[in-house]
Length: 518
Image 1: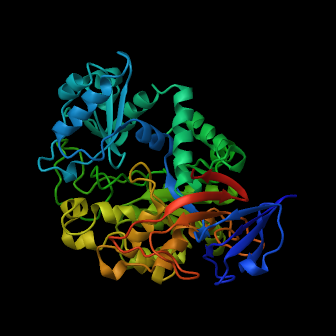
Image 2: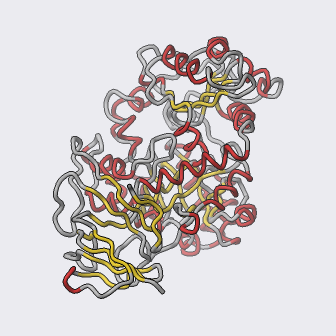
Image 3: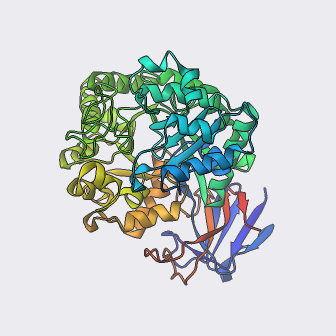
């Protein structure tokens, strides 16, 4: 049994607020205290004044998509259809003639002229190849003529199809399946490894992977689960498989829950989130499209799914963004509670992902049923306020009422923060700062509360209640940070909007270093 002493730092720990050192033995914190009182150890690591905190947990990621975006065609910085086409042309120039062009991240809400490229324009930019470009929300995509032809006739008769080439709903899932099916197994593993390694370099020791039909396939999901953990030098992966009445399937695949990407609705960016009030900027050309978005499940289905999860002993959950979708899910929770009992249902810590458009009644329901709200503070940073996407879609008043993390935390809603990467980048300190500086001051969180939601909150969401703290006996899972300014004992860095964010020097998972900066 070997031991390692980390000394000469500033440890963020309620167990010993003035600690400067910790001893790690057998994957756990064996001792915590001042340098001068430190016991002997087999190895010593000098911290040189660095800050040591619990490592982050990203409670909602899509690892394959993240890795593909990190290494490939990232369209997040494009600000016009012309810039998208230029990026596609440049990227395609280095591809084989039969390759599929995969890109992600365009967001027309940031453009002056908000019309994305047409299929014919994508044909020319992609050199005649199949082109699949997912919108920032990943709930819709624009496609080249070649890709639409490969999906015909099925896609033409599928809800969400549009001749413009911008596909939503089930039609999007059809073309997405074809596009992602072009990825070879080795490419998929490389993309997943890239995503996990990047997470580790940012002080993230665990991720919650959200997969399921329409998002990923079973081999993608199980392949990722096999890549994670300290034994592989990567963050741990906790999987959620989003298939209705899929509790048995989730257990079979090695998932901790039957939820995650189990869609109760779509996304605001694609105008498919299910709202009570119509979108202010509804421009969808298909007359069959609802001006309030779409609900994909009924309350009865929600209730049956949750009961199935309780009986199989796994977490359940749903992706729900719009207030109407969340209300449908809560109605299902109420029926499930009548069937299995409220306390038994609460004990599962079932989840709702995103939870963006809520009111007091919805928040009360989250508390009543003990639901974990898996939220992404970067959504408000990127799309909230008075002149960004939420204001366009919802109007100013509803934009400023969205993602009310501080209000939810204040009344006891269990929060677990994440990125939804690649919808927003892996950026844990940025997410903590976004929660602290919500566009609506009434919904801001303290640094400590936001940090806890992105660390301990993620562990509690997978029923690991002793994780996410630095204390004797706790798992030795922590990150070491360079901070641009001095940090007082047992304090977090300054995270005002103009401040430089901490830089990760080392990430340790259960005593094993999974990242070390050279």
